[in-house]
Structure formats: structure tokens, C-alpha cells
Length: 75
Ligand code: FES
Image (cartoon, rainbow, N blue to C red; front, side, top):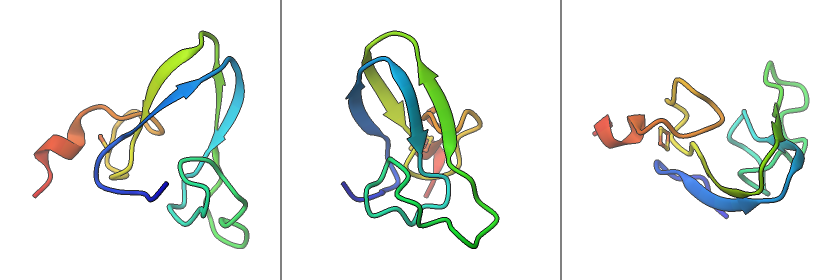
């Protein structure tokens, strides 16, 4: 999946997930270690209930790693 200026809607099972924070993961929205050597660290999130989640692709959400709709205001 490619990072874009819109959310990735994915179905998650419960458990700890590591979402990409640097934007360079080849396995986006998940971390693949591409942040190594940078100031970024992956977002560690515990999913407590299985179901759909919206992961921010624009990088502008105030609730990273989740989408908050900010992408709708971008030009
Ligand atoms: S993709 Fe929705 S706020 Fe970034």
C-alpha cells in the first residue's frame, strides 16, 4: 500500500501495532524499520477492539497515527 494524502482504512485484529511515522516504510501504514537513523519512531498503538481503523496518510492529523479528517482541508 502506498502512502497518499488520504487515510488507509484497514481492518485490524486486537494487539499491539507499530504504524509508520517517517513516511518511508515500504510496508505503509506499518513500520518496516526505514526510520532507522532518523529522529522518527513508529507509533505504538494497542488495538483493543478488532475492526476498521483509519490511518492518516497526509501526516497532518492532530490524532496521529489516526486520521482526523484534516486531509479534507488540504489543497
Ligand atoms: S489522511 Fe486524514 S487527516 Fe491525514
